[in-house]
Image (cartoon, rainbow, N blue to C red):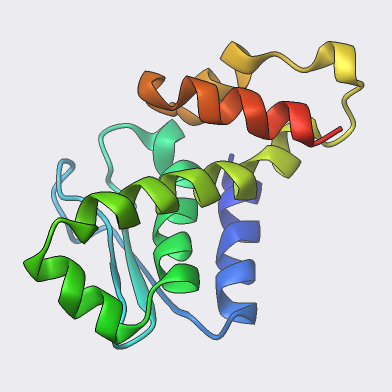
Length: 135
């Protein structure tokens, strides 16, 4: 799992995003992306440590998709839900290669993928489509 986290951080840095990986936060404090400074703050104490790759990929996705104007607009409108949904979708796309690497198509299991990264159940259809399209 740590190798995946390291690879995601390297990807973020290649995109010129600043990464703050901190243990100074309480276990239920959510990680976040700061669109204006192009930085992500990741809580290494997250109470679901296996979910950290999904959280990191989600926050990276916010920076890939949003401008500072988008961030200001979403804070005052219902666009926030759209941005969260899109970040979830792209996070799954970022994680699929880590899971399918060195697997044959018949070895890929939707529920194994979701459990590995503790991806919420409401994203099952999105995970299914991402896994199918990876082959």
